[in-house]
Length: 115
Image 1 (cartoon, helix red, strand yellow):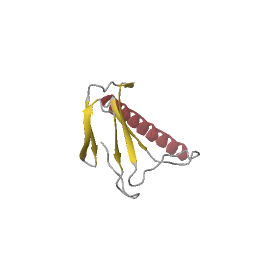
Image 2: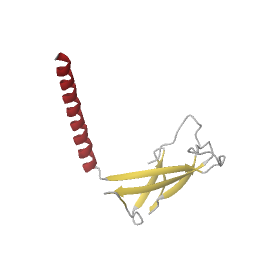
Image 3: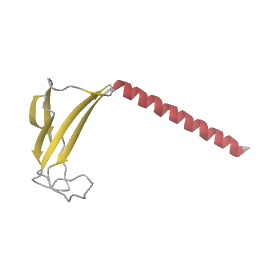
Image 4: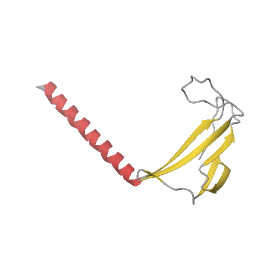
């Protein structure tokens, strides 16, 4: 009987946690209906059979891309002034500038911050 009581308490606790997580994620999703996606691709060579993400080395050109998703639809950014920042400094800006690139200048143990 004591074991059944423990299982019931555990199931009730897990149910309460699940409901809390569900409601929290729903409220966050409702408040943040827009998402910005930034993608990158190293413009360097790798063997044809390599299926992983090609990592840049110092001096590699890195191509950046941007998309805005709002209410599960891609948004038209052709009339929006887009500013690209690299490591806290303005890299470039322009109307509808969804793509840009830069040269990696940090070693393998460091990273660049893009926004």
